[in-house]
Length: 153
Image (cartoon, rainbow, N blue to C red; front, top):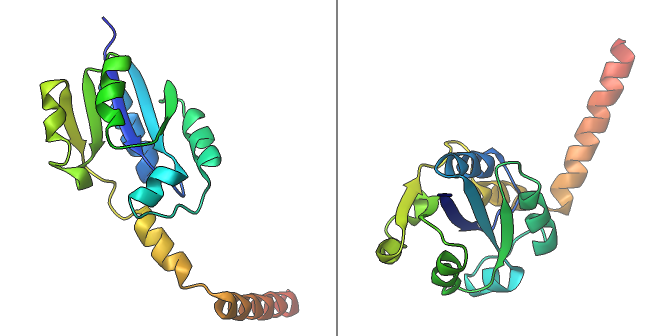
């Protein structure tokens, strides 16, 4: 019997933490289905992804650990997808610990540890500090460094 694992996420600014969780989830079963939150659903959750949905789902579809990537459009979809895809394990990052325990009547619920030192929220915070003035300042600094390197060569 095939063991199917299901997870969901936004997968904005795809990074090694995302890859690690998908790899660990795939190791729990024979098939991994990933729901990628649409831009509209993210708005409901109060999130504004940087990368558009169509690009995020295409990135997830291209990951070798992922068998199927589907749009996630609403909270209630999880129970529907568990039935539709005959899922045995629902897995998600431990930052959601306890939030999906109500699914335990249908599936095994697994919360996986995060990859330390990486987070989309932190990446967005750092990137937000780079306004136009900072970017111009950084460009001038890099140009100066480049000139110094040329003169020393």
